[in-house]
Image 1 (cartoon, rainbow, N blue to C red):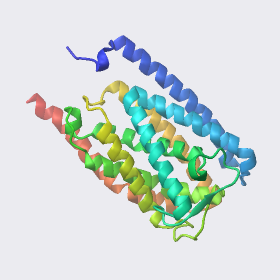
Image 2 (image 1 turned 45 degrees about the vertical axis):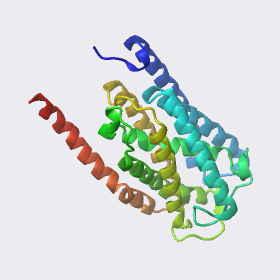
Image 3 (image 1 turned 90 degrees about the vertical axis):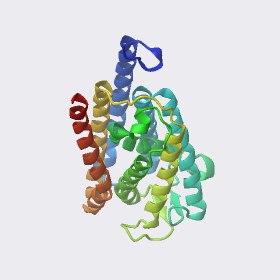
Image 4 (image 1 turned 30 degrees about the horizontal axis):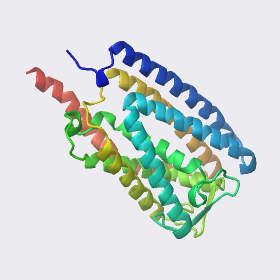
Length: 290
């Protein structure tokens, strides 16, 4: 007989997952609607749009947290949130004050409120949590065997790949933010106005977040089951929608496909890992049947 996580019955687990999915979809729909004006408007006036940005970010943060509670666990969701929020906040404070680890000092638009420690807008560390969660979902099925078997060995490959996923995201996120004056770099960067070392900083922050997450995550049997994959499918669709919106806004304001091309190149190790892991998963059942 299969033992269910934390002793809950299958009926209870299905109801919790269903409720979490409905809540996730509802909040994501709210955020999706609030994001449309940022694409359609040629100019963004933050005094008018700040409330939309904050409401959308908070809604999406709660939605992602609910998704993480259902597909990972409430404990793991809380661990990731605390790590992403705190580590990114420290990094952003250092970036504003000293220009490290992002390569140059920068300043957020004065109308982006409220502010937390060091003048960092609240939506920034919340956004880091949302962005940090996405690579974990995309690579969920390909966790190392040590995690499936309840071991404690650190899956460094996944830490590195998830960190690359964050870098790929910022390849089009940062130029877009600059184009709408969400923040301004003190020194003009080499890549569409962004310092190249900014992406090293993103990798370092991601590495710290994911190293902490996998170190503190509660080892248990793999989450790779059909119901979780189904819920993840909705998350991937939501990510696709927001990515299309971001790329549309980027094309409207910059008129370049360079960010998308560089993001795809950055993710090449991810795709290679995905293909290898998929082949391994397809071969394993055949070997086990013999």
